[in-house]
Image 1: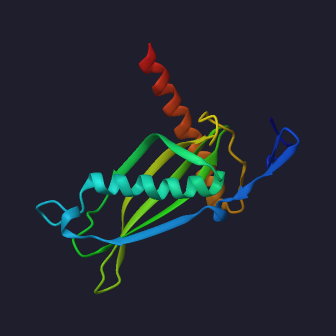
Image 2: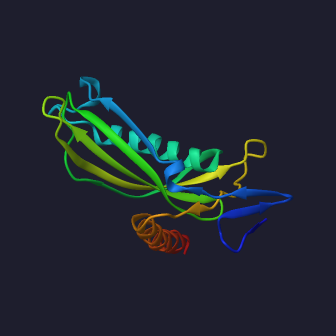
Amino acid sequence: MIRTRDKKSLVKGDAEVRGKPVSASASEMAEVVLPAQTNALGKLLGGHVMHLVDIAGAMAACRHANSYMVTASVDYIDFQNPVNLGEIVILKSHVNRVFHTSLEVGVEVYSEDILTGQRKQTTTAYVTFVAIDEHTRQPKPVPPLILRTAEERHRWRAAAKRREIRLAHRHSKKH
């Protein structure tokens, strides 16, 4: 299995796997915040936000890889603003970078006041997923990512830096 020189396709045996642009797997989901999902102050539980981040991230990862994906790590999650009872919570996810069998997905979470329509960003997270072969249940290569915008190239470079830190941290814990 080799990546082609232009890095827009992957040769797998006799078949060539074409890369996909970020837009092909970008995902969005939304739901109304209900009382069972909130704490005593009427704020969406942080653990529920993390659950939604994992789902939204997995949607983008699966769409990109056309594969089962498992969560390998959450490098970063930052709760900037609360999401209130009765608001709509909106999650947007996109693949930032593809490695060999893994990829990083960025997830942005917003709240929307249903009376005013005002939106504010509440959470940012970076999640790494690994592609799993449906027969062997082993990691498998992920198609290349095609970058089309300056913002996508910026996220691609930033993802490499986060991966370097994540791997250094993982190796330091083994010693």
